[in-house]
Length: 342
Image (cartoon, rainbow, N blue to C red; front, side, top):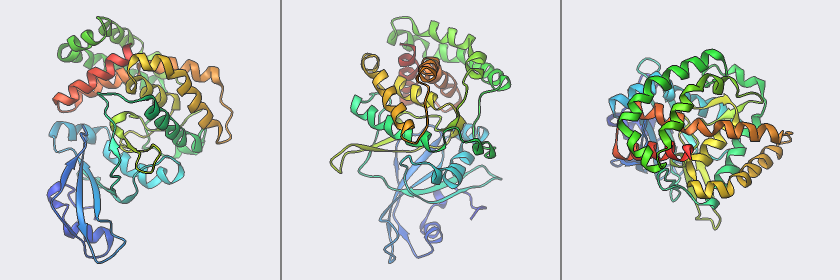
């Protein structure tokens, strides 16, 4: 199937029959979620084989040409497929079950055929989350980081994102400083409104320190998500207790796990709630890592947690300028930049 062109028009009953190895009939898809670089479709399915689920979610490259080109250039689609194939079985974080994953190296298109997590609901990056939701997400994050904490064999995966060298710092520095003027002209006024006039000064100071930020990340390294935020977390309370599953594995990395933690807390909670609860959430994450038998230097964690306050702002500046613009996307990037600045 590796030569198939993975676009919506080609995801039909014949495709699913090939994936599941039995006859499957599907209805017209409905689009779910609001991904910037990918597109998620839900299909109802019928089959005489009881192992075929009645509802299936398929993830494809974005139909937006700009966003799709970005996903291909940054290897997002390749990385997501390889995460599910190579890394996901070795970590404990809850993700949708994956029936099929493929990436067409020639065209750059990809497909994931996944478990439908309904009735779980996607978090809302713009609205923010409750403290209870934050606790659930932080506990789940430790289940990603803990199993391969300090595992040097992760270097065998040359497709994983790594940003620790001076060269990495220079590349990111070039991107941030190239895109910051565009961010300022399109979204700067709104960031200023959200931050009482302090936001753009924070971003300019951030842009001046990118190389030092990248080169100071430090060991131990682990598997990281790279975009651990509410839009990529599905919350489910149907079983009587709140739990979550994590999606959008287009930026898996081999890096400092505290970056994921600070990124999530900084962008997910509204500033007042973050200030009241963030160190309790850091404690919860440390406990989760220690449950895997690791000794964690809390001073090291606190140091890197403070350093990583800029991580979400970096993402907002760069991503907002390389994906297709939408009203919701603009609102989300403003929220992320402003919350990390505060």
